[in-house]
Length: 305
Image 1 (cartoon, rainbow, N blue to C red):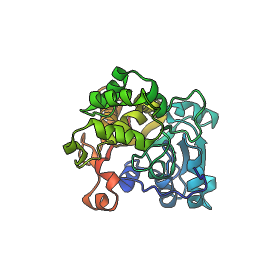
Image 2: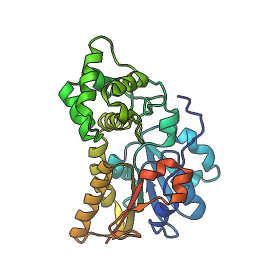
Image 3: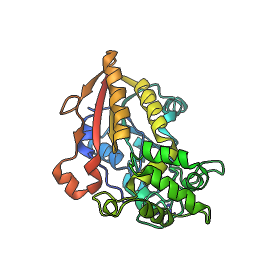
């Protein structure tokens, strides 16, 4: 992938997620999933004294987005890392706690469109699916999973992480196919899924490969466990009165966020903040028209007390 390529990502629920942080004059904010930098640049432009710590596993994220931050570099620190390590990142920076944490979960448009790592079923790319741009030799990839995991394990993750009702049929065809040839790229996997699901499903509103690709990406990156750890650690490093804004894109993520927030409210550690109270904020019709990826986004906001 060309790391100098400019970002194409459009941030979702931009205004709502930033306003929900209730930033003050000298706030310090962690953009824990920097991506295309959309949230960070919006904060820096609208809050002149706020400083940002931007975190992303993908080293190339900053290279793609840095042109946006000309003359603002003194107010943003980019850290190549994972938000599950948020406490250690702050410790290294000699910062005790912060006023806000923003988590925009899921994939950025750049990862889907330009990563070359097989996130999209619309491009023929190697089956990698790691959030890291340069996976190490011992890092698991989507290719490892589809070629080596048992039929039962494949069915379990496709159903469990993708909520795919044809998981067992897809797993069966994957195992049958790999007996003759290694499954190496996205289009090969798409063809396998197409053979496994009914014709009516292929013509459905959601692309028939969506749920399987989601499941593999979650498994490769251990996303759900990282989210649970990251939420707890993010809450730990918040000042009293500090807020966390979380944008999720599928029901598994949202369930984890919702339950975590509920637990904090039950123990009188926090209060819900949302237009709809306990209900999430969703994208407006206007935003969905402009950015179709926003249709499944849900924003939840919590304040530490």
